[in-house]
Image 1: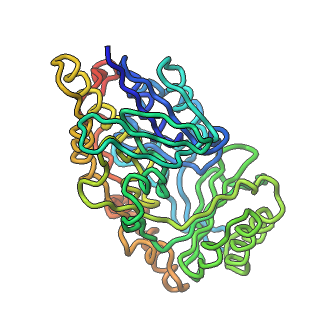
Image 2 (image 1 turned 135 degrees about the vertical axis):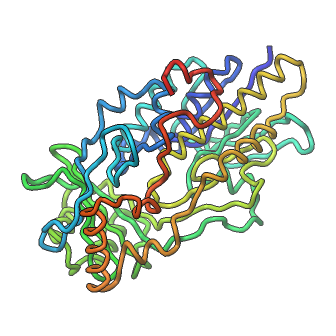
Image 3 (image 1 turned 45 degrees about the vertical axis):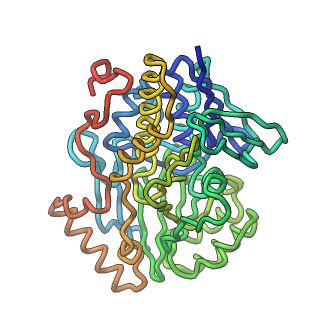
Length: 428
């Protein structure tokens, strides 16, 4: 019987999730290649919402996820003295729209590890770390042709499918589209930095958001007794931070950008950034979206998934979106592969890739362009207006006013095809 040889580029959320679903095709042989020397255990706090929760349940990992949830009670807006200005508690009822803090808040590294372990259990899934793709070519004009891939260690392999799940800066995308294709990335006007700092006794479990003049925000999230995660966001004066390359350069640029700002305990966190070893996990980037013209999420036997195809910036949607896309792409591949095996017809991957894009493209939404100006005001008057608006909204509990800031929840019922016959088993 014919086999289906698949290469997945990237071992973030989307890559392992896709490997998990594709492993349900008995003839599928899956390799996941990751440029990092090992699985990335660091990263910020992320959440699952709506169909992301459904996907988690259908993968059978709900209890594993629940065991490592961050248990964040809610989100609190504070001023420079640490005084509460507005509060949005988490909705843990399992019904209705989630708050800013989701019922399923989890560290990115914990979710990555769960997805990695669940997919690695499968006999037809192999992970290769410390390796990247250097080049790829395809058999032109051949239905079901091969993708010829050269790796960073000089080896070469042929695959039936290559799936690029390697993020906003996807090399797979660049190789698939070619050097003459315009860069599809668009800066969203916000530079984000986050790092770990040691806790002190008074640190709250709530997520705190402290807006500061100059288009800046400082946030904290305490996910464990020993660590607090610090986030700096700015939409003005980001040039040096954008240009920084080494860890020391990035620390210096972020510290210079925020030194003297009017934020609660900001001197403490800047000192942590510069002196605490925990802060060596600093990660900073300019938020970007990716928009490709219709029909260009795939070419031939290569397809892009998640941020590589449709990154939407910091809108609370990325993790859930990656899980949905992994499920739908794998399901479309499985459907057409099974049809070809049963009928003896030629396997047409491009039909699966096109249907995947047709289903997913309508649900991808950019963060509104005006959002950074609202959430990161420049003046004290702007901060006063935003904070008091949030106070009014949370006091009157008119959460629908905030709905444009958060992804739609929908019901926790499967909204897509039951590709693998799991709906009744998991009650979705």
